[in-house]
Each structure stands twice: as C-alpha cells, then as structure tokens.
Image (cartoon, rainbow, N blue to C red; front, side, top):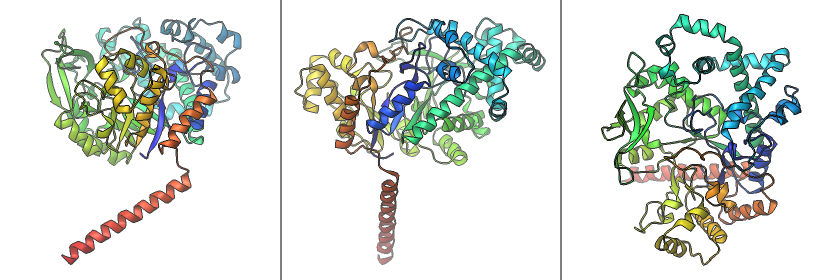
Length: 528
C-alpha cells in the first residue's frame, strides 16, 4: 500500500429514507464525497446477514449479503416495487438510529412483494440463473438453512431435531421441495444484493475509490456454514461442539471472555488445502479491493474453551495454522492486498506471523497515549508498512475519548501533538492531523471523527448488547467545506491518490533502483 488515506464508514450508517443505510443514491454520493476529499479508500464493516444481537461480526453466512442493504428505490425504478408499498412500511422513527426490530419485522415483507413481481417477469431470467449457477456452492446451503430456521421458529440449529440437525439427505430433499418458494426468495434477495453491490463497487472503481472489506475471523455458531460444513469446525459425530472460542482471564476480566463461536478444525482444513477458507477469501476478493482480517492473531494462536463451560477459566491456548495457511491460499489466489487487525496482546507467535505475512498491521491513536508514555501505538513507533487510525468501530469517537481522558493522559496528548486548542472540536482535528502526518503508509479515519461527534455516534461497545451497530448519519450532513478540509490534509501530508500514469512511472523507477542495487551487490560480492 502506498501513502494514501481513507474513511471508515459502515454501510448501515449511511442516510436513507428506509430506516437503514443501503446501496442507495446516498452511497453513491458518499463515494463522490470520498473523491472530492482526496481519499483512496472506503473501509466498510462486514456485509453479511446478522442474527441475534445484530453484530456484523456474528454473520449467519460467510458468503451471503445482508438483505437490509438492498435499496428499495432501485427496486421501485425497476418496477418490482410500488412507491406506496415501500413508503407505508414501518422501518423506525429515528433518523439517527437503526431500528433492527422494525427491520426484522417489516423489511422482508416488502422485499417479498418485489420477489413476487420478479417471478412474473422473465426480463432478467438469464442473469438470475447465471448467478444461482455460479454461487451454487454456498447459496443452496444458505437458502436451505434459512428455510430450516423458519420451520423451527428461528431457533439455533443446535436445537433442531436430530434428522434436521444432522442434515439427513432424505429429510433435506423433502424440505427443499416443500419450502421451494421460500428458498427461491432467499436466492432472489442474494441476487439483488449482489447486483446492487456490484454496481456500487464498479462506480467506486470509476471514481478511483478502493473498498476495504472486513473478514470476521470466527463464524457465528448459528450459521449456515457451521451447519452445512461441520468438517470445517470442531464438532463431534453428533454435530455438537467440542470446544468454543473466547479469550483468557486478564486484568479486565478475571474469568476471561466466553465468546461461544465454533472453533476451526485446522488439521482437517490443512488436509483439504484450506478449501473452505480459500473459497471464502476468493469470494470476498470479488466483493472488495482490499481485505481486512479481523482478529488476525487467531491465525497464530487461539483460546479453546470446553463446550458447556460457564466461563473461560478452563481454556487453553492453541497454535493456529500460521504462515502455512497464507502460503496455501496465496498459491491458489495469488497475492492480494490485506490489512491485519493485530490489536491486543502481542506475543512472539503473532508478531512473527505478521512479519512473515507481509501484511500491514494497525496503529490506533486512542491506545497510544496512556500513563506509561511508551505505548507501541505512539506515532514515532509506527512502521511504514502499517495503517494508522484515530479509532475503530470498537472505540468510542475521538471527541468522547478526549473528554473521558484523565488529566494526565489528556495533557500528554496535548503535549505530544502540540495542540493548544481548548475547544474539543479543534482538539479532535489536531489528533486527526497527527494521524495524517504519521509515517504509516495508510491513514484511515472514522467519519464520526471528521464530524467531531461524541459518544452518541459510537458504533460498538465490546461486551455489551443493545444500542450497538445503530448510528446513522443524518441526511445532507457532508458538506463541500468538509470535503475541502479533508482534501487539504491529504495534500499537506502527501496522501493524495496518484494518477495511474504517474504511479506507473514511479513504480518503474523504483524497480530500476532495486535492480541496480541488486546488480551492485552482486558485483561487489564477485570482487570480494
């Protein structure tokens, strides 16, 4: 990655008239805003369908998209929906918060109206059938899984009767026949999701914007992948988990954290050539230009807790697949750009994996300024091959963080970034400026920080449920003045995107220098 910059902004946080951010005109307007602001990247959170708790990091599928993101206005223009059908549905009253309860109750009913009209029209039949054929390897399992959950009142598959839980072929064939209409409805929603996302992605590419997609490390226990591919996970012959994920006890939690996600059967995955993971990454490389590996440390080592335990006290640390995993997938997929979310406790194992992978790690400025005054996240410690953030989706906003700092840490920040501003808004922009001047190749700033939002705009508070993944930008909140201010930072600190021709020339010149250095070393060695 070169010296560039971007903005972190979840799709669900986009403004729209139907209760949640989606692939609407506002998404295209945000791409235009990125272009005007001198940005290269739009970093999004995972786009998968969510279950209980609404977390995009607990997806119901490693491949499917969230149908909430399907733009209803597009369906209206295509003649699949009527304006009054979309406008009369209740999706919540608060423009600044997503009402997931209203989404769950009403969004699919509206989409089903579009599905009925779609079935009556053969206009896009060829594209639709081609989509189903191309994505059959995951789409059939996902749609059947959702139909099965519908039959079981949305209960987890672990609670289904044995013949359903174990996926008896005869029973599955009967369900597929009896629920064929519902299964095809799920096909339709995934088709519309992918068609609309591809159009937005293509528009971003035309504007020179690359999209960074987030890959959750763990799958939800109640996911299509866990049910349909038990060979990938640590399940016994009865399809019950042997152990689950979490993290060990520490100063913040004396009993550790019990996440409950299924663990991967890395030995089996290795024997298969990491087949499921390779498919997953290949699919995501179709959706995104750069991948962000959430919980990158999990590839180096992970915490295993016996299934059924009430806390994480009896867990043990295990080695992950390590660099062999990345060598395997790169052999099949080629090199691909990625960011490693390497936050948290650094151990020799995960530190070596980051170095061996060559991926840039992350620096978060909110973690830099503490009582020790020697944090690894301080700007003078940043590696060139890394990405700097003021905060992530798991942090509060920069303004709320500064307001909540103790006197020592706030004074330390002021002295370090040489800020004399007593106004918190100006203070936040000084912190953003510190990120932009970092030696890290890439700088990503959450949109809320550019807007100097407070705690009300926090995306997620780890370890809590409710009131997360909800914040939305109000309509018409991104101004030309803001775009020009951000552009000014990008220009001042050498982060403006380079034109393709100039970039190619610089890369060719750098290659010449590398070749010359290698030649000089070879001649020097021969002379000795």
